[in-house]
Length: 319
Image 1 (cartoon, helix red, strand yellow):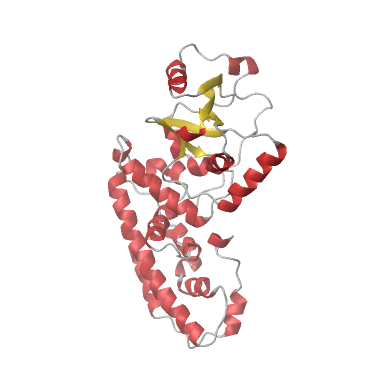
Image 2 (cartoon, rainbow, N blue to C red):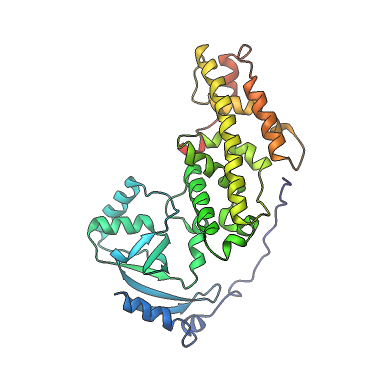
């Protein structure tokens, strides 16, 4: 995969982009009327409407019954510790100051950004939650870009991405679009392949294999259904590599070598792409070569000093 050239951001004159305060207030008549009426019918209340000052698109500020709001079905599970911290802060200051983002889906409301806040209010017994209601339902698939509430780790990103791929493959017209057309939503092709792996092997040390996948994986120019099948196939190859690496790690442990980084150490030794100046790789040929190297990994010449020299930080899932 060719390296992307760094693009230098052009300087923009201060105050030259987007809407003026008056323009943000001046929402075109009828633009949100149908959605606003639906909110009221659902038992919610429209508190206001405005044009987004950056992109100019109309939005609603609404008060929704907490019971009507759910997280998008493909996002990560909430962190209990983070929910408890949010509960404590809301109780301490006596205010809820961070509206969630929501879309209307069927007879419910989905939040692609705000699940921890939603769960905190539920556990506090709150009746109502404030939301920025976006008319465009596709914003639900911008989950990785939107989520700044609690940073995703690699496992969470990968699982959310493969779940989004399944949701897109199951609905028209997105099922007929190419996977590559959702590059912004998915961020990295490696997330899709690793997501398939994590579904089958939840305790996978995916961070050990991400450096390989970032070199050899790419977004597919295939319809979502076909691309999803290919992701599952590629995931099987990564798991086959994980089996071979795991066997090598067990041999190193049997020799008395100890380190929390034995798996990344073995992967680094067999990953020939890190020394290659090539800008593109064939996925299958590269993975087959790396798997063969892992299966033949010679532990006899490896010492504790070799492992210590390799060093390394915590696997990404644990950061």
